[in-house]
Structure formats: structure tokens, C-alpha cells
Image (cartoon, rainbow, N blue to C red; front, side, top):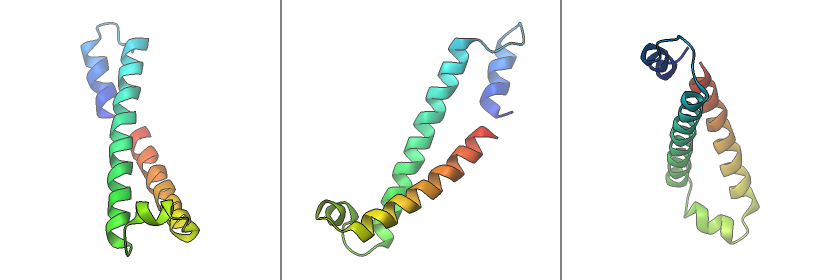
Length: 84
């Protein structure tokens, strides 16, 4: 159980999480996950030579595959952390 769920259960007197609390928790996790994935992309952009976004727009397939694979790996880690 994560900290947000514990907080929501503590604030709810019935001990059940309502649908509104579940939606709020989901939106918070989506925002956190997207922010971390964006920061990971920027980090990948810093460690690769040149401007990664420009190279992908110019048709550099190798850079697009590299960025996609690294972002996918980071997103799997983020999902595992947020679901625990």
C-alpha cells in the first residue's frame, strides 16, 4: 500500500476508498509518472550527442529507437514504483 492510499484511508471514516479518491490518486500518479518520464527524456537528450528532438525530427531512426527504448525502460520502473 502506498502513502497516498494510507492518507486517503485515514481521512475516510468508513475505511473504504471512494471512486473520487481513486480518481484523484490515479491523476496524481499520472502527473508524477509523466513528469519523471519527461525528465528522463531530457536526461537522455543531455547524454546523447546533438539535439535529440531535432535529430528525431530530421529522421534519425537510430536516435528515435534509442530514446523510445530508454523511455520505455524508465516508464516500466516508474510503474513498478508507483504500484508498490
